[in-house]
Image (spheres, one colour):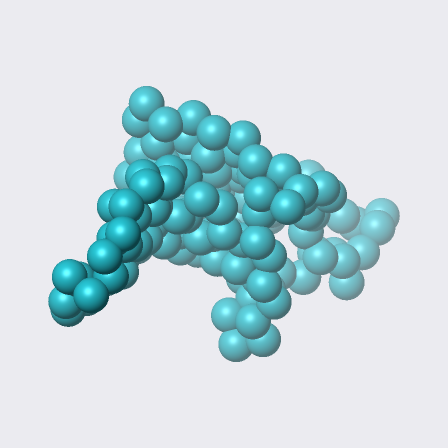
Length: 124
């Protein structure tokens, strides 16, 4: 069996393309269109979840940052010559708002807030 190297996913106005080579990620949500590559993408293998690919969408000094994490599930592709052009996948993308401050002692309570988006598309 082979593992996918390219993913194309969409849901709730978010469009994401991810390539293992590089790696590379294209993110599009409303007016935010960003391309990331190499060290701009943090990739973590989590045996219970698959691969997590994270990027920083925005940083506001003394206020916080916004990140997006794409959950890439384990997928087995048929070996050549039966390799299909793409197989359907369903997964999640998590947008996280992280609150920070120049005076961290003034921040109280929850500092990270998450929005989970269901994504559907293909992997090949």
